[in-house]
Length: 493
Ligand SMILES: Cc1cc2nc3c(=O)[nH]c(=O)nc-3n(C[C@H](O)[C@H](O)[C@H](O)COP(=O)(O)OP(=O)(O)OC[C@H]3O[C@@H](n4cnc5c(N)ncnc54)[C@H](O)[C@@H]3O)c2cc1C
Image 1: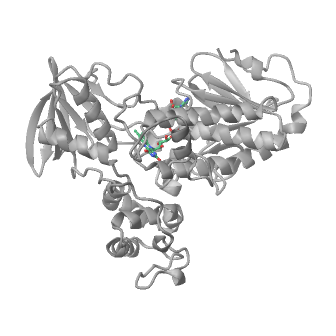
Image 2: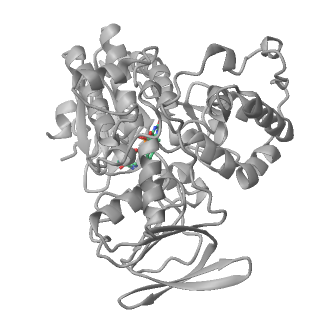
Image 3: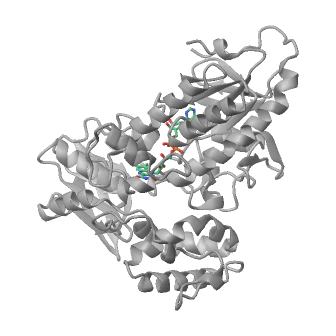
């Protein structure tokens, strides 16, 4: 479909850049809101890999790549926690409380397709495969112009940045070798890696677990050595999966409502030592185990994070986050069993250390690992970077994000983890002024909210943004009816 078909004079266009879970849910909620308000709208849902509805997390087809949250915490429909479980039952998908990520990808695609059907013909969505390399104010008929890598452009009335996490950064001089996989979630990145030669994975989090399971399953000789500074591996979910946190274990928003014996800090003045003390106490006192305390805290994380001082946030990121993450993002029991088997069979080792150098040593790589002053060298067929999202948006080489920062359309949050937005998700420009027409959701807001990368948060942000975007489009409705100069319709193959 040529994009010019979308460039109707009379109908507002919202460009959603990135079609992973964030972009897909933003489009879904936008279609629903437009249909409910009978507002004509076109949504251009753009993804560079054509992974509409899937993105990095849900494009995997491996049946052992499971959601790391139980089914009752992954509903993409706000206010209906049972929605995903009912969808799975209706589709005959059997599970032990943890669905495969591939199934979840189908679910997201279906949600979008359902919203599309229900909204037609008032509101429509076009799924476009293109790499957006620039976003500028056009000053023309529509205020924004998206520049595409291949050729062409898309003019829009509003844009949603749903670009996901930054790819990992290499904490060592990265070799130019194709045997160094800089990001395992790029489509096709792991093709050919399971050739029976040893694999070193930098990082010991959930991505490492998935990659180790895939590679060892694909070749009987493949052995994986996982390395990280502290060798911390995600904890395991309880069996059976924990059910929604009982009301009495929820973190009370009002300290006066704390259960007897549980000292809740004054949430208006949070500091890191107090917060750590509180979490430790709550974890120790939670009758159903520390998991309930961690899960109870989760919805409060954005509010707490925003009230921490900048030095405390930095301290948290440097010294505490790795411990929080392995307790907060837990692995499903089936994954834990598989990982135990691999470790017992000697096919997966997890060791503390830092990779300090990597050299090509045909046919593979020589990886130098240091730990407590001792260095070891590992001959590896492959080295995979599974360290998680890069931590400095200002170092990005992504042309779109770079351009947004260079042009002053966006500014980094004070921690430089992502972009700064106002309370409704509207992007702030270099001088702190909210954009009229650009919003963001999901991982790019990590510096501001910390807890913003998982489905419950993305879902709620997408639902809230829909109304904001619709208002922008309505505001733009009058100018849209004016006759347009020729030759301004966007075009993208
Ligand atoms: C492996 C993995 C497992 C996870 N498991 C869970 C889980 O079990 N439960 C849970 O709640 N959360 C989970 N998460 C977290 C969360 O659900 C994901 O991070 C979430 O899917 C983020 O979606 P996203 O759309 O923001 O980002 P992404 O999935 O990264 O999607 C962004 C998309 O934007 C595209 N894009 C980026 N820039 C451009 C551009 N300039 N032009 C065009 N396209 C562009 C990319 O190609 C990509 O497809 C997991 C995350 C990962 C990585």
